[in-house]
Length: 194
Image (cartoon, rainbow, N blue to C red; front, side):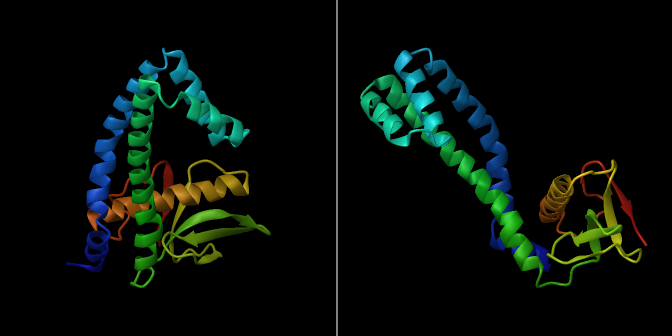
C-alpha cells in the first residue's frame, strides 16, 4: 500500500465519496417532499422563518414564529425532512474537508511532485502556487504549471481558479492514488511541462 492509499484509507475518503454520491439523489428526493409540504400555509411560514434566520434577520422574532408552529403535524414532518437534508449536507462538507484539509495536510509530509497552478500576477511576474502545499513562487519553466484557458483579470478569479484546480486534483488523486496529472480531470486548463 503506497502512502496515498494509507492516507485515503485513514480518512475513509472512498467511503465518504460514495456516501456523498448516494446522498445527491436522496437530497433531491427529500427537497421535493419538502416543497410539496409548502402547500400548507403553516409550513410555508415555517420554511420562510428558517430562511430568514439563515440570513440573520430578526432571529428572536423568527424563532418565536417557528416555536408557535411546532405542533402542526405538517410542520413537524417538514422539520424532520429538513434535519435529514442538513445531515446529508454535513456529510458532503465533511468529505470536502477530508480532501481539502486532512489529505492535503498529510501529503505535505510526503515527497510531492513539482506541479504548480497559476495564481495571478504581481509586478509583471506570473505567480504560481504548489498544487498541494502552500508554497507560492514566481513562474519557473522547470516546473509543471497549470494555467487557465482564458485570462483571469482579478485576484479573486485567480484564487478561485487555484482552489478549483487544486481540489479537483486532490479529489482525483484520492481515487487513482497517483501524483501524475495525465489522467486527471481538472476542467478547462492548459498544462505546461518541462
